[in-house]
Length: 239
Image 1 (cartoon, rainbow, N blue to C red):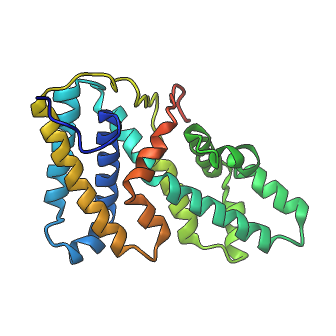
Image 2: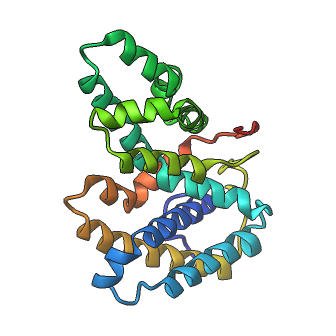
């Protein structure tokens, strides 16, 4: 008898979500290894390798690993990037409220006018273009001006860092490509095991981050999978 899945998602979506959560675990390993000592860098690397093996060996899709990793990376930092760019916009609107013309010029130069609305519709390409425009529009004079008005240099650097993380070319993320592929009982057993392991991570990490909504959501399996409903093709590079 064919072994049953313990999850209700297409296999590839489930595994990509596991990879995304694994990335998030890595980013927060300093906090989480304190409460769960077995969550070490070695453990995260091993989990990554097992997820990669499942996708490559059992599903045999997306041979360009860098594309799949880029998709997982995007999902893991999308919300933090949106949080920071939106917060900075509110700071700018508050600090430059007495000079609307200057405020409008700054928002235009930093890409807010052209791309912000689309980013909140979870359009990945819009976020990449917003971050790229932010980087190119942030001249030394604009940077000094907004820092003098009280903007955090660390916040600005973090936003620039998101752009560097997401600066890739020809990223393809089509999670529906292999959802109908038949897999063996052996594969299902491994898939179920990885899913249960990652769900346990989610339960503990989301509990630890109960009062940090952003991080808590990054360890919510169904919310991470939900982001994969948007299947985008990144067919043009970001210069």
